[in-house]
Image 1: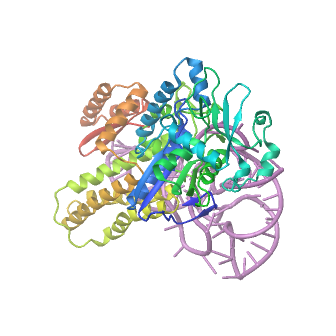
Image 2: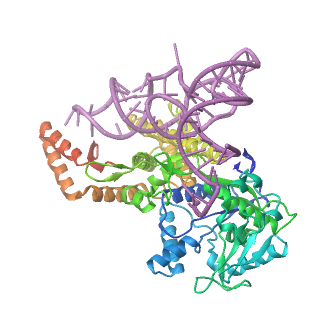
Length: 508
RNA sequence: GGCCAGGUAGCCAAGUGGUUAGGCAACGGUUUGCAAAACCGUCAAACGCCGGUUCGAAUCCGGUCCUGGCCUCCA
């Protein structure tokens, strides 16, 4: 894995052999999640899946920040209770992330459920001389972390305190000993929202929850800490300061730091504040969840990922990159369906592999290993997808060959046996990526339904046209048959004449 | 200004010292009544620019240009 802390690829060496503890910074739930949240969730979901597939016992923790200034602000604007707003948004987050096949973490701790842990960590920092209490002019008390008390500050983000001080904002620093000190606990004056604490009513600073909750669920000095690149500074830097200052002389807070890259729109980072975001729900309204996930995996997790959206003349908004991915997912499911059909065909028991199948067999049997090797290399998903593409191509080749050489009993037996292997290999290769988790028939059904709805089409009228065309073809009236096909194609309906009759599908 | 990424064929995207990444698009072919799908082939003597190291550089070193991110809440 690439470790942000030392900017190098390094082998994963868990604290306890065979077990891995992972803590990922999840969302602040004041609004619905967008494609950027999806990317982060998928990146770390993939990590967990891959490590588990590699035989490691993974404990995966992803927190939910359900109390912070933005949530309080949004709640006061709408009159909703802050925790009710954040609970609602948490539900949406979990639904949307679940829809794109992200496994549920083992723990999803919320700050609001961990006040005792937060308060005791703040107390511990005060005891160690790393935290100090300040009386605010409004009568409340804040607690700050003292940067001077921790000499490793800046090691993750490669910043030095002197340079930071030059650019630091002075306005909010009146009560702090040093402008770079950050809040561990923010006092809540008067009727403000808050929890009781040794410093009166208040609420946690943003960073302290992750220090407190990661330690509770994984212990100090766990294996992997992850999150978006935007969290490197100040969030993760501050987590390190708090956690290591509360465990002096006990080594690093986390051993490996992993950060996912952004989703960009027009070369700019997708974000709430820029207003250029596309929500997960927007995407799932138009594309299949697996297509969106495939799209998110087309780039290695650390690189930038461009998300295009295009407004068509008729006003519809489409996502060309996700559409491309959906065509690939169609292809993979169609391939799987063909393999399964071949695998089920009655055939002679396989003997020795015929010479013409040998190269296909090599590709088909080798694919899962290539996927594994690609993921071992810092989750190189484009290479993993390339291995799956090669497998699918060989599988289709195999199916084509089996059709062409229907009478060759020896080949049929071997092809059928290889189809069984190919089907299993494709499923297991896709499964570690969180793809193709459903059956081909179910995928075909749900995508057809969705595409019919998006295009405002009706299956029965399409089928009626197809019956008309079949009649025309039976009478060798090909001009009429072709006219019907052209008319269907205009509506987005693609048809194919197969030995089993005419089938149709709606294009992406 | 400081720190961090990235610039690879029409487009997307791997590769990080010497033999095919992969995908999309386009075009040609096998197949088909014609198509579609699938497969084969072409596009591909590609690696931002300038120097250097080397028998050999997309890959290492120095410089430089461009794009983005962080430095304030952010996945």
